[in-house]
Image 1 (cartoon, rainbow, N blue to C red):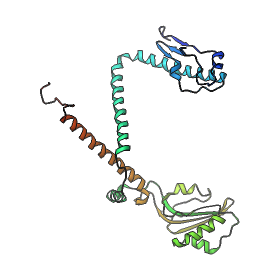
Image 2: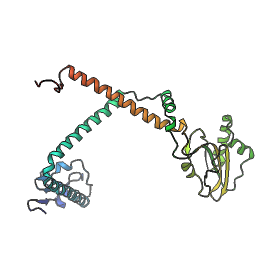
Image 3: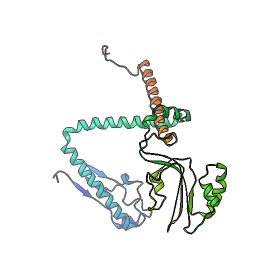
Image 4: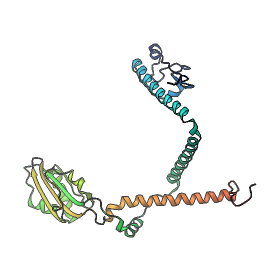
Length: 290
């Protein structure tokens, strides 16, 4: 270690710890906890941190915290010395990062407080129709119903018929039967779900191959885990055009991002023009300096 680098760790004893019943002040006011070069870790630097109510635990946690601080300071100070010639570059980078952080935080505040974030269904549909060829599925998706009964269950034929019937008037009766007699069920066949997610609900022996993924198909499997009914109402294959319903969340996110950019750019133009008009900002390129 560089000779001029001085490291000291000053930790208080158990007597001081025991005198602090709250556990939040494991060192005396004015005591230095750790030191590396000219940098010190003082009690005020750890205010708000909880080191526990037990004296022994507090000392252990404080010691670990101090050692971590020393490690970071040793590395930081060594880096500062070795990279001193690059300090001006780092300062410019830090200043650029600071500006970006302020601007980003302010923009987020503006969006949250002043921008209408609503995206209409008409806007979503219009964007989809204009970009339909770009919405290609990356996985097979299905609309389906699923019911899982005990292995020895024998649901009536009329229930099986209702299970694959699109008549919405029959759903309440079907749901009432399933609530009492099935282990679990899913009847929301208006939502598109990826086949990989559907497979997670099925026993490993029931593989949803492309041959089985056909529209209006009924699949039944009875094994040790139960009697499984799977009805595929509709299917869309990978690399085909994705249906609008499946892309709504993605399109809303795209349109919201575009709306934010327009909102912020309009405000920026307004404020820049105002600053130039009021002479609080001036551009001297192309004119003589004042």
